[in-house]
Amino acid sequence: MARRGSYAKGIAKREEILAVALDRVATQGFRRTSIRDIAAAVGLTQAGLLHYFDSKDDLWVAVLRRRDEEDRASQWDAPDLASLLASVVRHNAEVPGLVQMFVNLSAAAATDPEHPAHAYFRERYESGRARMTADFHAMQADGRLRSDLDPAELASVLLAVADGLQIQWLYDPSRDMAQHVELVTRLAMARVSVGS
Image (cartoon, rainbow, N blue to C red; front, side):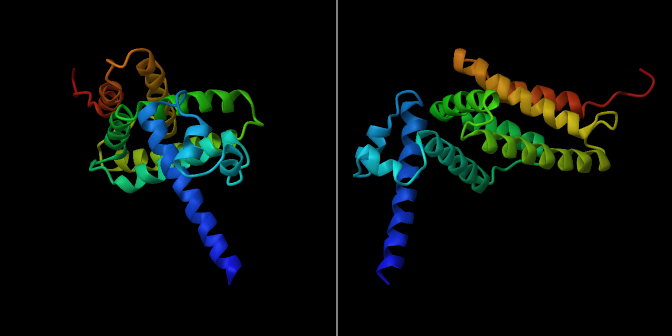
């Protein structure tokens, strides 16, 4: 019985760590959030905090996964996936620290297959492309998306646009990431009038 209670407490503490880390990174920024600060906020030492994760990078990956879960649970009101992507990008502008973390970890993971975030980003891009491709096929079937576009290519391009805009936005927060994502989706949905 004690083991079950101890296990439940461990899960609760891990959840608390993730909640605090997510909040700190979102509000303070990725570079200004330290393991020491998170540990102190949840009543642990740095070593005690890392008992719940294999490494600091594993903690950051868990934070990104939690962010993804919360984003999916938000159920933004969007008529299609293209609009949903613009809504997500718009939301990202409200949490600059998480954008910093995403950009930093994605660059590290892309260049090092041994990085703890590598599998996360590979899975994230594969599932994101698959979901978007399926939605774009459906949009083509009901006439909302140009039929001359390859849905898989469009999905890759939109993800690349969103990620590239996040990097530009970190340099210049006055750039409207969502507006640019919406521009690409409008081009994909544009109709060419017959005889013009």
